[in-house]
Image (tube, rainbow, N blue to C red):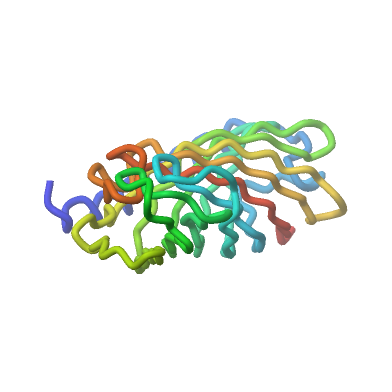
Length: 228
């Protein structure tokens, strides 16, 4: 499938979900919805927070890379305790060193600085279960599109590593698990775990990576406000 057909499919999917939500709404009785005591099928909000990231498959371990996670969210109510959520995010992913390491391919050369910067536009879609206190737990997938890439390597002694020969995938897909704790009115505290369902790249620089395939691995901590 070419790119134009692939992107054209997204509005169709969203339209089908909206139609499904409308038909479900017709069957819902007058019970409290997930936010208020009035029936409300659609709710929207804004969120902001921080990513703590690493890339599985590089020469490092630990969530040392921090990035922004900001955007909007919408809910489609399916039942009094079930709702689909859709987000549109700007999310900074990647990896960062936590100290000098020897090259996997050369034990006489140190990597003194290393980082991967992967700013993305992201669309997570999740199914959420709400408890009686409006806190909710979700599971779903997140499609992402790379906006830019930057990979930096500094070594001692100087060792020429051409990381541009190993490009990252433009499109990504992650599995997402999320928990939102209701704080007050429309305010929620959110913790989320996200892991790559497909690799960031299938061929990585052997001079700095432990394996050919690399995967996103991150936690996000966010504040969310849903407008009632």
